[in-house]
Image 1 (tube, rainbow, N blue to C red):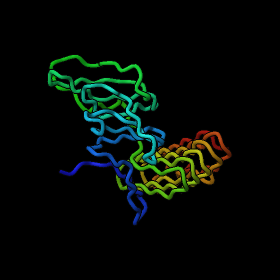
Image 2: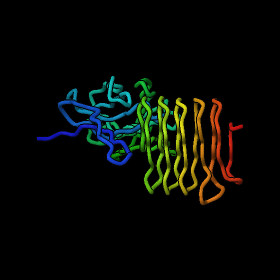
Image 3: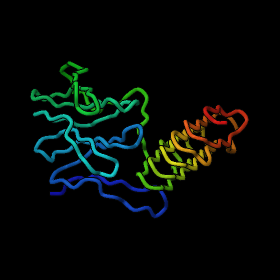
Image 4: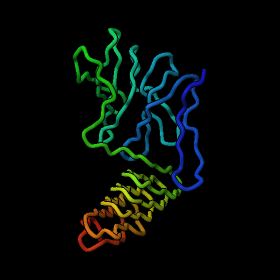
Length: 226
């Protein structure tokens, strides 16, 4: 019988898939950390379902729940310091728990006879498209994307939806699309943080701590750009 593994696909045309896990049993429900550097997921590799956290490259998977019950469906908090998840208890119903991102301070948030499952934080900022530590070329989809570069000098382009674009720590070239976009240079001396488009106004351009160049429309909100 087959089992599930996690893969990451590059968004650029013709991009290859990278296998991230290789375990004897199912891995599923992946969730990116808000900064795009970690992935939380559930896995049965140790006999019951536990929450694991690994680097974006697939290295260093760590069991952060270590509980005899089944723990699944992780979700990072917007700040990345907490993970909410479902714990299936022995009396055949589920509860929502929250813990520190390293597995500490596991706390039951719900306590009722119904099955509570698949928690989501009020403001989701998980990366839907993410690069790695190298120099990446990433493109959005027609929908609403959260596109995250990491340590390399990245080129990131939004598309038609209302996108959130984060450059990471490299010297990046970042461009929104025709939607209402938020473009964050973050750390690094960014070559271009661009929100200039055919729909003038309503975008946010934030350069970050480095020496950045922002290209915007007159009505865009601009933060930390000269």
